[in-house]
Image (tube, rainbow, N blue to C red; front, side, top):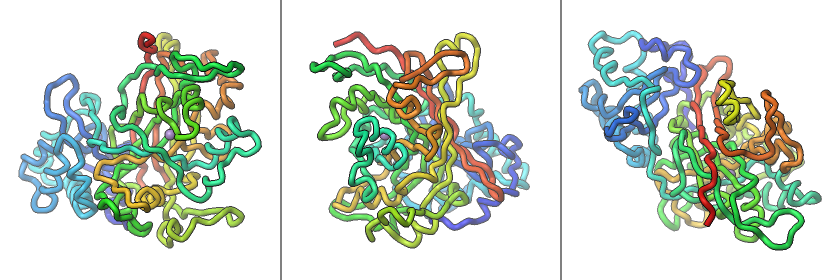
Length: 441
Ligand code: MN
């Protein structure tokens, strides 16, 4: 785990006014994305969010302001994907964070400020691409509250499968259909077995859902045939983003026995552009606790560090904006709010489980946390839970109702960390719009 240091001090201010008190991107955050000026043909390059701006690391690397390890880290992070920077590990990540913190904190020389200002672009004037080439994407299933309420729909008498409390369950997802926030996608086609009939039908999904998740990018990988022990797992975590695992429930539930999700999940997964580093998240660590009456993790999934500070208190929200709301100039509605602190397994445990059999993780690989649902019904991270499998429609403030998503709907995930004695930091947004299905096959 990263220890707290001067880069977490909430009293430190930046000479860039918009950073001070910024709800997402103050000096204490410094998340990374890959972007360029909107509508341009510029090369995408690594950038850091600061206040209302992005700091173009490619431009900064040419300014001659940085030296030694910080300059090298800046050059690695300035590339058009962050894979090389991710692979370099903690010393490099920390060199960049601490170097940029020094550069952006007040006071600093007028000459240095001028040179840094020349590398700033207004954040509403950039467009993003995926921050890394994701070789493999694995989606876990680690909220016991989500597992129970979705399990109840499929197996009323036995909602939680026997393995859930013993290992972080996952399936291997599809990296090719990962998209960055703001990308629209078409309602998927597939095969489903509607209730009350014996023959499946082919067509557009009628039960399209979102899943509120966090994504973890892998830093240094592990060799094929090796594994990552739990007490080293955090060193392989580069940072976290918001992730929406769009899910076609009708397709998914018909196809997923016995091998798991396929077309119900593989049409689109959205991530936020900004990756918040594990070091920035250090103030928001909490003990990882298991109720005494529940099975304790087997020894390979247990450890003193994970117990003391394995959990993360990340506040998360889901918002929905319908086409009607947009047409009438209304704002969307918040559907739910929860915290990642309730998750049953930590990302470190997911890394250890993933590699225990010798599977090699590679830099830029992405792990999804699984749907994040808290203990209360209104903390559910998917609409299938909020509507009890589509039986209880949600009423929106403008009178519209939803059981599942409709064409034109925009779903936005938001995330942030906030507590007394620390600077609030945020993830920004992960949005995506549902377009009508393409013409049937
Ligand atoms: Mn999922």
